[in-house]
Image (cartoon, rainbow, N blue to C red):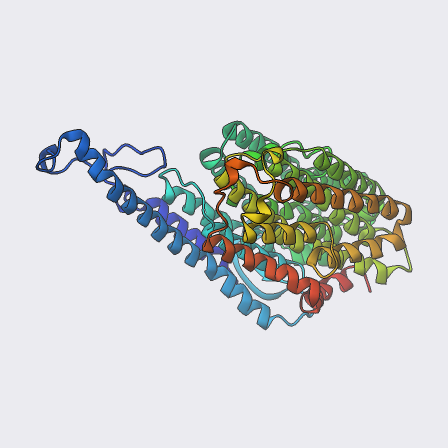
Length: 541
């Protein structure tokens, strides 16, 4: 069941990538046009239609050729979206079967490399199930969302489906070796999505993204091996390592292993000062790739903090919890201040991700601190941090998709170029306002539920740091209100008098994300109960 959720999109990606070129493009020999479509080859013998000269022949053939090319792209996008929805349906069924026992459920396992203790093991618990389900939803919307395919629909959708499969696989993996495989191959898919379909200085941004995050994979691999070598018998089985606690009590060796994990996860999250790869990757990536990068890939880092460091090395985590909390507060305030100074819409949203991941890390640091008598507060902090991962994935994914819609219509991300769009694009305005207020933590929306729990738990453990972190919420509110003012209020520039509103596909995709944001904000119990089944036992409540 869970294996199908991982490998159906991966197999579909391979099939799409191996399709003959003629099945997905115009016939060979055609030269792509500026919009990415390809003209038909010459007719019989290369002659012209009777009565038309060759130049007029080209003009007469151009429109139907463009329509056929666009029709093929739409068909492939619909097929890819249908495949992307399969894991979502499977995870919905898994959700219905989830019992919340506190351990791993629906486990599927097989021997892989038994001499090294490596196996194929996947399963769910109250941490992985919400993140995997959120991942599947974000990918369905991102795959269906309009984007400039540049005449290359097959590799684009193949990469999206492949990335969906490995991302879900990472959250479901119960073997450290399998976890690392999914972690690394996800970098490759995102590198090509940014470099081949991005804009601006996309290739440089893609290279910076890959070099930074791949550099983080090296200490991560060393840390995995360091942890593996302390197990007895040797195993990469996560459940067995959690049961053994091979590095209990800490020490220099445990600190070095912790440092390796920390560097890898901090780069991916990203935490200040490891964040510099993130803004250019977001600004230059196509909007669906940005939604996936912020909504899914960043959560791999925060997920690693919980699944590995907190669960497998709780003593070492407790020793470093205070420095981690300080870094989190720095990220909260720094990310908000730098976002406030931005005039580029996408760069602004990118820095808010640094800010919001700071909330997550603050909650995790409070939950993992070695303080007695605060188990209830620490469970609240951990539940809030996990919920913040889900909420941020949905909200920021929507914000990046909306920014892509604005770029497609206006040709720029510069906020000063806009104004007065509320009178021209009602659906665009409504979606952006809802997503912005959810991100700044308005009551009744998912962001408020998550951040309230993070700070409620953190105030009991690190009251001064939590108080300082609250400043970030005020700055975040200011930056989003400023953004809305520049985009939608004031006089409408004459050049935007024909600014089109969102199309039906865009409305449907954004509605799918934002309705869940509202549902979590109004009635969070259905999600909190699942998360708490994991959070409570982890902190010893």
